[in-house]
Length: 140
Image (cartoon, rainbow, N blue to C red; front, side, top):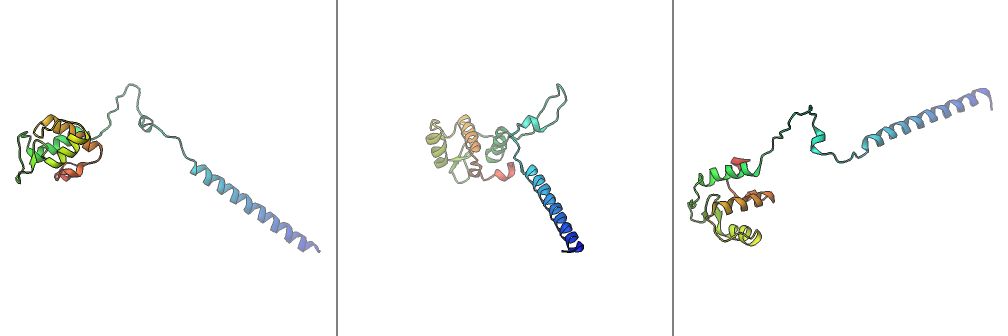
């Protein structure tokens, strides 16, 4: 084998080693970026100064319930719907009230009690059951 063939083989080996190094380098970068970070708490997501209070803006069920009351009954605890099938401050239908409030959550069967309706509504909203109120789009 002459000098030029040996030199060509050395160049090919050097190029192959450089390419192998580059592939290993980029795979290492990729693996480093895909590493799963540990769970962090909400407080670790915000920068705060010392003794500076943190007030997150979170919509509470209380505000949502107040909105539902406003549009369902205008705050009248004795309200009865136009068709006569919805009752009370949050306009529960008898079947919904009985299924959720009485049977599932254990409240007494008093559909006109505003406190029971608010508590039951709060539990229903906690389970994502907002679709029982037709005015939900006005409050979300």
